Image (tube, rainbow, N blue to C red):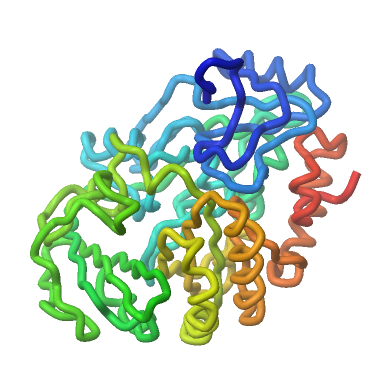
Length: 411
């Protein structure tokens, strides 16, 4: 990001974090390997959709978005994709070739490598996080050499927060392309939305914790959809907005059929996602505790609303990935888009961190939170830390941020 009238300043996409390390944009993988061999500390940057400095480094940052995109569909139906490629670019090419992914996140702007590394997800009772599509990947290890990860090692290493190497390409499972319709039901009771997540293949509830929520239901075609859900009527009109602060960038609703990659995300790939000037937090709770989690946040709604743009509730299927926040349990993800203010950072984020920690919440690795003991709620964190320390004994890919999260041992 360039600041008008001044020198180049490296920031995350929403301007919430200023990167301290110098940024190198490798021309190709050989150049990337050369940089890793010559550095004592390295971290990789994708599209910078993090809100807590997770990607920062005490040494050098590698911007993978400068590498050329590669999308190769193989005869077995898997696709090889470069780590810096965005999901939007990948999805368009897959659809062109008659293939699709099982799910997409809200923002197609995020890089494949970054989303996998942080356990980022879409929505759906039966849909796992985006990393559950990974069948293998290649990375540059601490010695600068390429290493391929396959088989059982994928579960242990796919969600690694960039702390074992710089991933250059991934192999993902695909399926035949499909069409989706998106319908919005306006005015459901927030306290009841946990009962609606099975109403479509992907369901999100947007609320400002004022007692009501809009349900965004995405359904694979062919399908019939009800005219009412939890007493909320289906809106027949496609409205290009989520809230008054998020306008002019969302995917079509009103039941209009379209290809999967133009309906599963909330935001269009050709527009700035969300409102672009924000802080984000997200917490995963056991699906069995969904009602309690919703009640806990609703109880502090009046104290956080002035700092809030919108909150989104959605579900993620359980998986076996060691550091996935949906590891071992079907989950409700409670997401917050905050205004980029001191009040959001100092009041709202700590408050929701506290009330959701009381119901066993796991914070999203790449978003803002004040959960004190992440290790207590991530069951395989100690195993992952021991493995990562062994794979990178010289701590090339460690950093104060991943140490603070417990993902690497203190240096």
